[in-house]
Length: 586
Image (cartoon, rainbow, N blue to C red; front, side, top):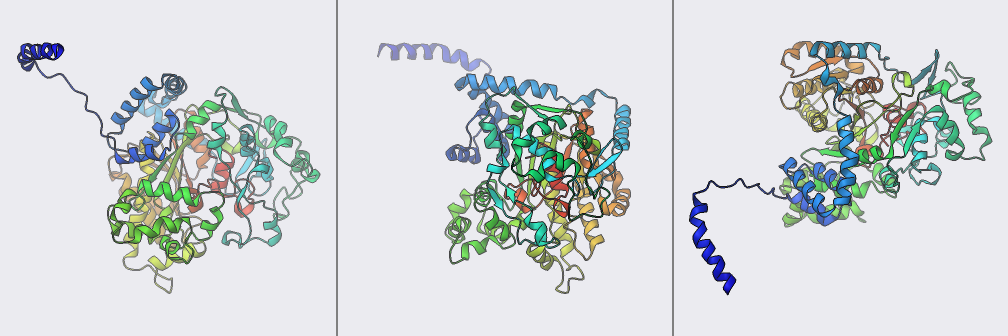
């Protein structure tokens, strides 16, 4: 009672004085969004890196203020963890400051022109050119000689002990290959780099990619009892039996791996790999609320069901709910079809029942065009697929997918949506509908570039290669490039120079660019160069750049980045396989 009386006296004496003083600034406590609270309840994080990564992934309002608050609290409650995180991240961020910022604008243009001029042209056979000889990574160099195998071996991943999530038998993407050729492929391995990195405690340890390292690790990476596939045999005598017309059809006649990839050495510390693994961001469109997307991919990307859902990627999600024996995805969706399940739909991020139905009436393939996966990384190789030193800046890798008008059931569904039954011309509404969908995809890509402060992005035309329809090809090419240039005509992305390889649509892109160049908010340079080599060169000169990997449903919805990177050859070694086989993307 005495203390209560004492404080009342103090309050009576001093409150009039304090009331005349200007109010002290009060830091506004950021409101914790529902998404963040949801993450906490699901226990989806285990360290400071993970907390920050998941917060940024959800993109809550007042992100910076919220992150500041998280860092302050982490520093108080987990000082040791915070000190480790700060010491391993902050110096790297400082070292990766954009070196190009010290150049004058005129000099910067000269450097960009020189980089583009000296970069090799794109070659779909993906040749490694060393000392005047070329060897196609797609057709002539055995898949066991891929640099990604060397990378994984040093992280403790042995593909001989990894389960296969999809076989190489009986799929539409093998229609052009013989049964004997298919039998030689071991299937799609389930590689979990993030999980493996978590088991490695020495952050200062270095991963080395070089010809010498491949020679050293080759016996550990592959079966020892296959005498016909020793390193010496693969370098000298082995030849692809399905590509007899190639220049090196009688074997490579080489003595060392350095005659393919050169003698340079790429080195990266485990600490940086861990940080990059925790920096993955997913950007989704309006039909894929973040919570629903997290649960969806958690179901369809599990090792034991990847093949099951990939075979059914072209059917609407409602089909899974209405089947006689609903699978886990069907059990997730079915309760929310009830008109009274308003709270349940809202818990997954849907604004209304119409919003939910619009989503579940689409297939995995259709929804995949609303997903963009972004993650920093490095290529092991540069120009002409020769191993290079690690660039000054990381490259932002972006995986996204265009509309598939070409392959199997997915293509039939898309064609029926936009083309008349005779499949000879577009429906009246189709042009605007396709453009709106493409814009949504590229807005996700551009948003990822903006989020990671990319100023000089590179990209190859997406959806205009293996996915391009047999009919109205030029019209589809025009729609894609109109969507790109219209987005670049709006403010908000902050690009300086956009390097675009239109591939087969070069004439279309050049014509459209002349018509709208005065409206663009950044410079656009059309080229025919190798995007991988161009991105590596830009990063080596200190530019913040990116590489767009045109992917498909199994990559962005089921986590199989790189697809047939481990063993595919010929038609099964395309852009995505080359991207994964020569970089840290896995």
